[in-house]
Length: 467
Figure 1 (cartoon, one colour):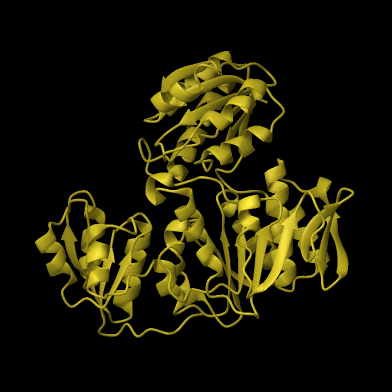
Figure 2 (tube, helix red, strand yellow; figure 1 turned 30 degrees about the horizontal axis):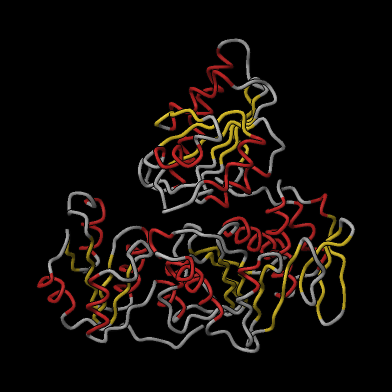
């Protein structure tokens, strides 16, 4: 995909040993690099990984480093690969740049070894659903696919599985994109842009600039797909790749759009009917946008219209994304733990007409929660607050919306189970990151589902079982 790089004998410094850092360290070591890995946590905190890494011949450094230690760490290094969770302006990276050592994200390194075609999806919301749906459609059509990136399995961990006929479908975050060099998707997708990760990027402009890098190295033979209905996204239309759009509100010059309840794909002035909007199995207007994007990508990739429609109809959705968990005594529980920003929570609220008991809170990302007020007033019967952001959320919405301080997720589920009535929706859509009380949003979502299933067992045991 990009200019090849030789790792044999190359000194490489991997910064951060979460999932991506571990995968990167092993990848480099397996290809003969001299790997050093550093993590701010103590040896005890990441004990399970230590013997595994040392067994692979990787040198390890733990705990915060002072300036002298940083300088020693960088001595002789020829490449630095930070994990996505490491800020791009971290002192170690800045010192490395001052020494003219390249600093690449893991997706940049992976792209140097990737074979086949790469489809990259980014945006503020809908990435996971759209990425999963695109991979599902291509796979159902009989193509060789790999699903990777920010969605769970690091791209670098799947490189060895690719071939010249592979379509790798990768969810890409702003953290990954801000440190690319020659990274180039054959098909790039920008779904939407709303303020997110401002605790990391500092300004919305910096966040947008990181996302826009997905188009930076594309060629005339490549394709870029953008959301015509999103003003911020519209502004970033690149000039070099072939340009496609998707829209649920207007016809597009080239791409996917809605006409009289049907989805149409247009290319080169030729219109093709794909399927009816009513056939889409996922709830919410935002999911219509995700489906339009997936249809456009699949068609650009050469999948026939009838195969696309059949695959979309068979798509079961994504875990933690408005995921139905259970119905207990007429109350329906939904897990949208992936709603880690305000805009995602708005989309979740818009997916249901009303009678919603919503659970909000977690680790604040320097967000403004006031845009939630109109929908909470209109559709929520109860707003429960959990986690570290509870004080801030209450200070911003509490004068307009009645809130209940639950503190923890288990307490919130217990409270709502006592007050929810048949016909109500209980929705976990936190508008926050999860790292105050959970390992990640998946851990939070799984915990919620376990709590709900425990309620279900109790209801069944009481002789008044769930539906």
